[in-house]
Length: 292
Length: 306
Image (tube, rainbow over the protein chains, first blue to last red):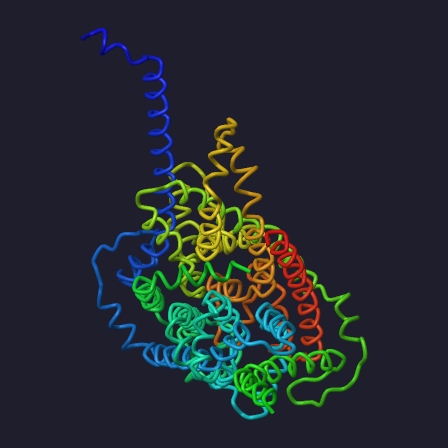
């Protein structure tokens, strides 16, 4: 019996042990690095939240734990600043641009992905150029154009263009539509569907994940946009968005830091909540942008 | 008849986008080219001055500083983000349990509005009293002045960019996970260690993604505006209202003055609209050149693989 038990070659067992130990060490090392990184990535947000719950006096000190918790800061920032209006402006800007952009971009993306026409390649390359172009290049002429119509000082210069497609949205949707097998479309065409009906009845339902991703990106872009509102609305505080309000809070309204941070937390909270509900669409969408 | 109808249908799909490209891209681009040869402000009519605006660039000390800062960002910011994303994605690819949790945490900051993130970082890096300097002091290092120091303001912006590296991370992670396992197994049998496997398998396989990240990173850096503007304004403590924010651009000592900030200042604070358009055209040419490189290489890559 003992002989049999001892039979399995001891060296191999030892190597296994060693390998296992090494594996375990590597496992611990990897996870410790990951955990340290998690702490570093979360610190800025946690710190901001803690700051937003302090008294205005304590927010000026180097403490990072509130002596007393002041959740009413979040109510006060709504009452004592124009935060509600900023929020309303941001929401109407983001929602309207997202819906209009999808409406105007889906057909163009469909044509680029699934139809054949002369100049198709040239158009696609142009759209990539528009997408890559820094917005500052056309800023001055566009500003002058909107000023001529008396629309500067409002969000109209940022909303109206959404009626005419957005380069990034068209690009993203085209990439997604390319993954839909053409056989489905051919079947619909054989059944006598025109191109518009094919798009509405067959392609749209299948493209839902792509449309969701494109819509989310557009919504987030508008929510975060600072350059656009700065350019067009800075002369009229009534049209300011959250980002613009945040950046000038202290000087304009003489608000204390605890309230500024409370408003900052409020500006990021909706995005984080949306992300948790739509995580899959996001990751899929981003991966799509990295493919050619 | 039939083709006419087909063409009309195609046109109906494309019409909004075609109008959009014409009105919001080609028209302003053409105007910018024309305006770049003129001198005018919001109240006067453009006057033809030939190449004067372009000549003026040669002796504009602020432009020189802005170009230097933007180049610094291209050389440091872009590689830092690529290395950060690559490192994180390699780490995530190795973690089996909890990978979803870690991925979410690393991705989240990239969703946070840049203005809000910048405000958070100005607090976090507040000289002396901020938690980062507090921590450094505890381990015996006296922390720098970060956003209040001409030397450390740009590195602080790099930290901010690294924190928000999540969007790039997701692209890199997909690429790293897409490398066929069989390649690694073959290399392991040949006795390659982890570093060798990374150098000779992972890196070559994800080269297209690195190129994509480099080009989009350069384009992003060329238009880098929000974080630099807000950091300067909040850290200087003299944030002004709306467009007046340009008074604190570049704080401290012009160290965060990037090319787009200078363009904005020239156009909307000094109202030198002709000169601003000349700056815009130079920006356009550089951005276009970088984009063409991407498209050339991308085609070469897909040709190789197909």
